[in-house]
Image 1 (tube, chains in turn brown, blue):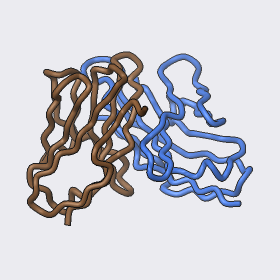
Image 2 (tube, chains in turn blue, purple):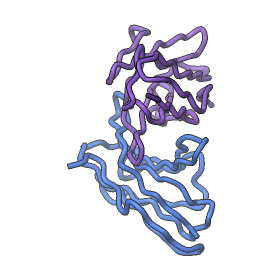
Image 3 (cartoon, chains in turn cyan, purple):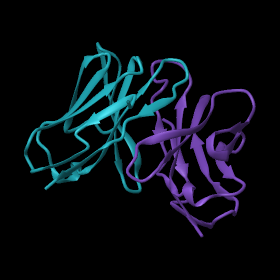
Length: 112
Length: 116
């Protein structure tokens, strides 16, 4: 089984809809992250969490919110989806020592 | 704030040729550096990392990278590529220590295409 799982893997939604992307991990890491990937821009950090009670904005948090329900679960919500939020979204985890991040398989989101 | 620049967006090469993917970073403090690979329709997988010690770092699949502090570079190399190396490669950096540690800054990515 994969260490970091994301659901759904693909989602098409309409402008204005609320959508939640979910991430679960079995690595026992405290730190979790949400990124979005756009062609030519690499990965950009949306939100990150160093533990259940510590949630921080990344470089592009506007229009997004997150919830850390447990050490193993970190959800990303789009309150009112817009077309320029069409992207590939990745969840990642890391420990506190090596800083190496482990990525999920990604969620491809299309907002029409 | 740190930044990471990958100097080539696309690198086409022939099978069994050597390849170098270039990465420069800017940071006023010490950094940890990483190279990740993304195969089609998959997440990112760590190729190699530089934390400290030897400036030549060896990773998986025959890749290696050299940390050059004076030139603020961390170029990825492989002496002989295979078709299966076709993928997108990302360079990433984070500053050492403190609460900002482990927040990765990624480069824009380099698409490596290996042709027969």
